[in-house]
Length: 376
Image 1 (cartoon, rainbow, N blue to C red):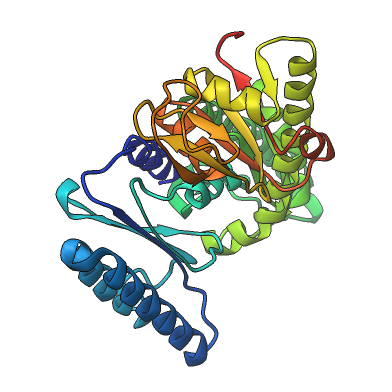
Image 2 (cartoon, helix red, strand yellow):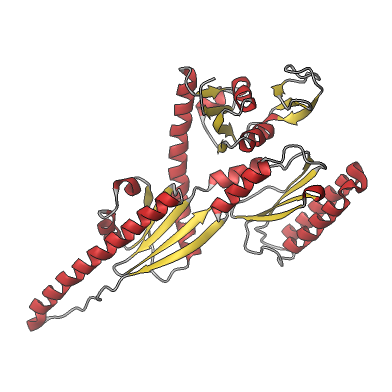
C-alpha cells in the first residue's frame, strides 16, 4: 500500500500546469469529540466560500465535490480508519482523489496550478517501508507497514511438533523428542528467514522489526542473512494472537529512531559531498539550479524551510528574491513558496524528497541540500 501511495505521489507531481486550478485539501481525522469534527466543517466551509469568491464558477464542480467528500469524512462514512485524508480535485483532468494516510496532518486548503504535495511527500518518506516479522517455533507473520498504515499480512506455517513435558522414566524419550523438535524448528526458521530475504529484496523494504518471545527471537536472528540482519531495527514483545495494528503501534518508535539515525548519516554525507565538489549541492541557489536541470536524485529539505521566491511562467525557472523578470529568459514571474516548488520539481523529474526534522548542518546550509545523479 505504501508503494502505491509513493507511485501516486510521483504521478501527481507530473501535473505542473493544469488547465484549471487544482484544489488540494489535507484534513486531520483523528477526532476525540464532536467539537473537533465541527471545527473541520467550519474550516472547509470558510475555505470553499473563499475559493468560490476568488475563482467564480470555474471551480464550482470541484468545490462541490470537495464539500461532499469533506462532509462524508466528518460523518465518518468515508475512510473512517484513516489518521488523515488528502483530497485532490481538477475537473479538466478528471482528477477526483481521496487518499487515506496513517499520519497526522494539519488542515490545509490550497488552490494552485499544480497539486500541493509537500506534506504528502513528507508522509510517504516519513514512514519507511517496513516489515514486522512475528515468529515463534511453528509460525510466522509478515506484516507490511507503510505511510498509509498497516498493509498486507502473510502467515507462514511449518509442521513442527509441539513440545510435551514428560518426567520420570520418560526422560530419555523426552530428550530424543526435543532433539527432533529442534531439528524441525531450525528448518522452520531457515524457511522464514529465506522468505523474509526474498520479500525484503523484491519490495525494497528499508527496515525490519522482529516480534515475539525474546529467546525465540535470539535464536531466529542467527538464521538471518547478513543483508537482512542489517535492516533489523529492533525487537518487540508480541503474542501470536495480537492484531497487526497493535504490533505496528509497538514497532513505530523503533522505526522512527532507525529512520532518524539513517537520515542524519545521509545528510552529513550529502553536505560533505557538496563541500568536496562531488555529486551533491548545499544551499538554495545551487539546489535550485540542480533541480532546474533535473539532476536531483534526492532532495533534503528542513521541515521548517519556507522562503518566498519566483517562478517563470515561460520557462518554469525558479529563483529566490522578488524580481518580476526571469533571470534566465526574461519572462514574467509569479510569486511561489520555494520549498513547495522545489519538492514539486524534484518529484516531477523522478527524484525523491526527504523532509528532515532537525539537522544543524542542513540549517547552516540554508535548509536545503541534494544528492545528484551526476556532478554539475
